[in-house]
Length: 408
Ligand SMILES: *Cc1c(COP(=O)(O)O)cnc(C)c1O
Image (tube, rainbow, N blue to C red; front, side):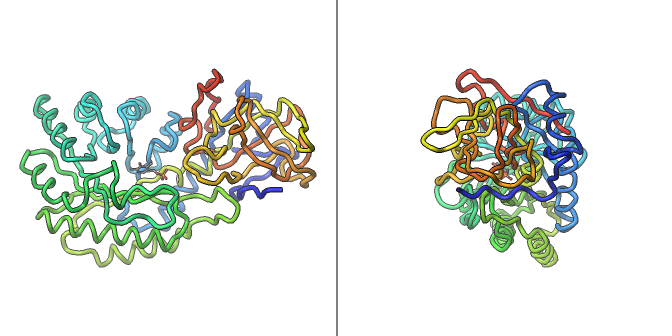
């Protein structure tokens, strides 16, 4: 048997069925009318934001990285909970606009911004986190042609990375941001152009669980921001310290010690260098805010045995949950937390693999896990499905189409 990842705390059963948002998932599936189905639990998101606010210094604003989950009802919920939104494409700009979000609180990072995307952002008053000198110059030109003042921050490619992070986004040669050494000159160029200078965006990595490493990176980020400010001779109005906080997905993973991260950042804020004393700071988080709120539900369509192994074949699969199948940025396939939702909490009775309905051996949601015996009609649940699930999976592969989604 292979271990399954840890199920986030606080999930319970009602009459033996996994409950989400106070109701058994069978009821949500009946209400939705079909499976597969993503359920996002609003209360879990609210609690997560409250925990963060309680642990972090008051001075730190909280932004939501839309790419983790752009489901419009979830964005509407987030709108009442966070201080700003970070987007990474013109498509996400239209999504946040559609959700009624104040676009003055939105920043737009990401390499390869097209002119029309930058034009839409400048018209909307969105801050562009420019990823290169050439992009900064294009933004300035577009602003001039529109007779609008673009709001520009510089995404910095830091000269360090976040240790232990699942995805390194800084340090060394990267397509993201402007190398730190070249930033001061670009700051001066932006100031000289008359653009509305917004400061720095410094993102060193994501999906880290080690609080010490996160705190160390935040310290390095503040040091770098101070150094760049001094070298450019300009106070940054804002500084986005990036994200990095991860969630446990795999056997042995443990949650981030938020108290430690908050305390260390508070200490740093107390002795900020002069040049950053007027700067407004934020962090941008996706996965940490919404990942554990999401549960992916699929129905067992067939139960079969092959060479002595049990396969629970579901109507879901990697086309909705690419990450759980191990095909989204992981080297070694390990099991996400999963369960038989209609026998939640029952004793383990057998070893089984939960597979999807796609005709590829990659389509595996749980490999040789220990489960209560499940049969055709049972529902399975994959946990930690709230981030990089529905929107980061190839829904059209094999003509399957997207899953249903509900905020509950
Ligand atoms: C993806 C991304 C995030 C969000 O990362 P999470 O791991 O979901 O918190 C934040 N900022 C930038 C620049 C990103 O590219």
